[in-house]
Image 1 (tube, one colour):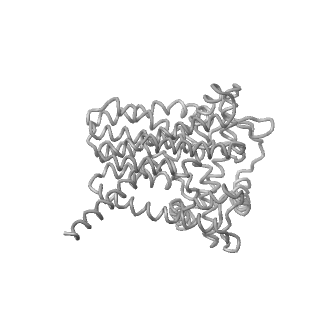
Image 2 (cartoon, helix red, strand yellow):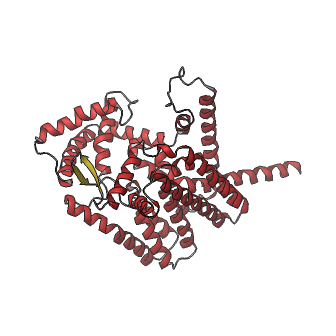
Image 3 (tube, helix red, strand yellow):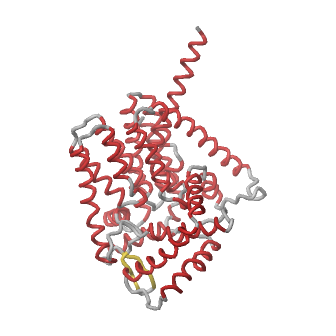
Length: 436
């Protein structure tokens, strides 16, 4: 076990060292870095909207920027220091996942298989080596799963439920697409026959921890929003995806030039013409009001074409669970973006990565379904894993990709390990029976 975790730690360090000079090249890592530095400089939780205007930010939630700021305060404002802390945290996640698998099965083999699957998962190296929320969120969700297993065996568990509430709040304030997490966990605890008073305690602790952030946003814009990311995604992603599907152009991708052209021509321009925007944006409230104006237009587009909207989101959900890793790792290894045109990716590396990741996904799904079948009578456990996987990608909709599904990877590794051992035991038993 220690050897497996040590190898995983080493692989994460090697990858992180190879990308340490490119940590702020993408917009999301740069945004988190700027939020953290602004916090340390005393400007508050804000980003520059214009050259002379730093507005309070409502898109990002505060836990991850505060985490970066804490590391910067201790070690200096260098992103690689955050990556090193994330690698240590991801190593703890590996231990936690292995412990959970042992708690479920009491099998050393399953525990070692879980540790190996997560330690050797290249996606874990990728996100541990980036200034993104995924590694922190994966740790929180795995810790929640571990506490849930403890509560499952102890119906009278006030301290465990309080800790679950605290971690739920941290998850919500790390990445808001887990907004349904408290409700899902409450259902699981109820199915595990945890006392209702302690389920209420869990919800209460979660609400109390999230309340200051909601109160801050209420003061800024007049509504207790968790994040304006949901509004922005509806405006800039869902409505535009709906228009693309209505026009028969299902191959459009968010945030490309063609996508932004439709967004500005059919959504922004329509909202501007309707509401007559003339006043410059000088506050978070001004920006929020404009986002709400755009949301009205976006909502009308979606209501007018519900079938296209649902189809776009369904396709996004399915796309999230298809292999994307070959594209990402091809770019990491070669420095060139993946291109779907066969004439472009006629290299041995492209073919190998494509076949490798499709094979990994097919085997993983086989083992995962085997574990689901094994636990088919344990509704609480299935909701916590299968429901969590569906929730974390379904909320993202059109935007869903490997980044959105990664935080649930430790729980998937647990179930895949269990399924792998169940199939192995079945084959061994069948072989012995035939031998007789």
